[in-house]
Image (cartoon, rainbow, N blue to C red; front, side):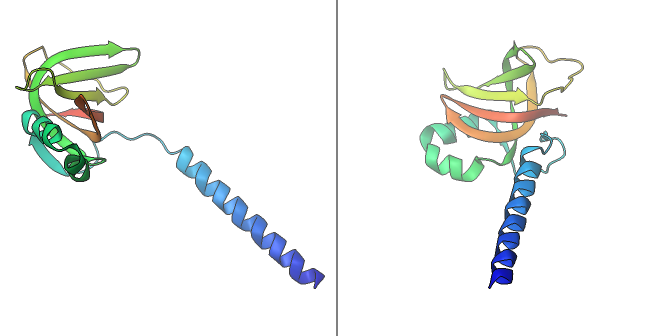
Length: 139
């Protein structure tokens, strides 16, 4: 009886330690850009924005969490601390595509406002603008 109870407690301890090790591994994984990942969807910025504006729920099911290549005209480049955000304009006034570049991404030469650019990033949804993170410019 005592031996059985000891085996049960040791088994529980091993399971808890294994779960803790797996959790730490997931937490400590390095952050990855979209550069090395395959593109799930290639789309223009206007089309992406209009689809989200028309039906956000359906667009989330299509694009949320997926790697998307978006082409559009650069409206603005924002520098906020270590992060750089490229904003692509759409023909619908007031909305656009916010593309946060992956930390440490160097673009040479840096494009100017009005240039046509293509960025690849992971879609995080819609909040007045469509948001992409971990973006890298493609050529």
